[in-house]
Image (cartoon, rainbow, N blue to C red):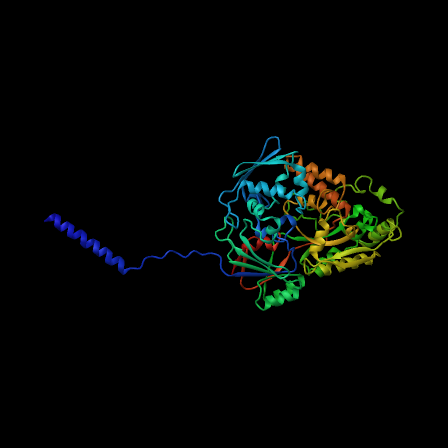
Length: 558
């Protein structure tokens, strides 16, 4: 009887529990929050190739690298979890992050890394790293799917900075489909994957859900090519875009209209590139003329008026105050002085005078505090021009300035620089050119005759570790070849053979000083790139990236 009672009681309890559970709703799983909505932006110009080996505006949107740099300037693992160097300095070992996939679902392996590094060295590559890779790498081995060993022909303790610049590409995908197909249908491992490029109109991307590093809050990204800033701002006012790059006047105007402004974390610097001086017999072949042109520029006036006080005089190629090895005396040194009379005086000397003013290093002692790099001195500029015998000593005294609109304000800045040079008696001709066309010419080999002895301005990003970029732009084997100077080449090489960081910094500063003394790339100002944004745009968490395309993944919703 007792046993029967217990059985009935058990049945009743079970039925009761069922009835209670039927009367309550099952708790729902919290919804998975993923990317939503569309982020829209405009760009005044871009390079429409998509293969990073051919130069592309979209490298940091689509591709990732073995190592990255954090906001404090420290090297951190990206697709490499860790790396080391052998005791003899000749073997670099990288451990590849597991679980990372390309946009087509293929796993990232060591074979992809080996393929990407070797592909940079192939004929036709326009990578800024090609010279250093070819001069340093002997061969690469992949003992397993997550290990890459780079065997070097020489000790190069700065080689990790060059590896930082290698985008990792899909080996199987490219080998199966070919380079041309990859350039039209690229895939990488970054937080955005390519959807469509409409040449001359727009480019579209789609967010990668649950990305290993950072997942965009926006499901889609559409960037439209709008060269005219007035047109881009009109689209922003009509609610047709969310982000527009603006010049200083426009930034103040849009702020007055109630729009918020955003900036990128490190400044850019408009650099006046003196092209092919080493192959020219024109005015720019003479360092005194180049120095005179630098002295003729009133950088403070440009900062205060053209940039509405939102810039500061100075600017060293690829280098900012937050950069590794930066010397704060650079901006106060006389490299950025303005002196028209000194410039003219230099140009009047007898032929051959350049040799006695520059015995082994173009006549300048490489020190930070004594070279006239950023001074403004009209009298000194005119004196330099006179010393160099300008214009009589040159069969064609006219200097061509190629003006391109890769920034909305650059054509105006080209005209301003032309005006400063004309004011000290230098003849100039401003020639409009497409930015992509000019860049392709600067990377061409052999060096195009139409660039020899000409000038142009590029608004250059500043890097926290700038020495590999300086090598790419300045070295005899670099892509831009601003110098063909064995002294500078040797100075640069000396950095790579020291494992002591203090010594590396000292040597780095010496290479920069020598470059500044040649006046082939004088800076104008340091400035931030400003963007006017819609009320949909929240915080920018990747502000340290040096261009907008590298920072889209970190743009939050308001």
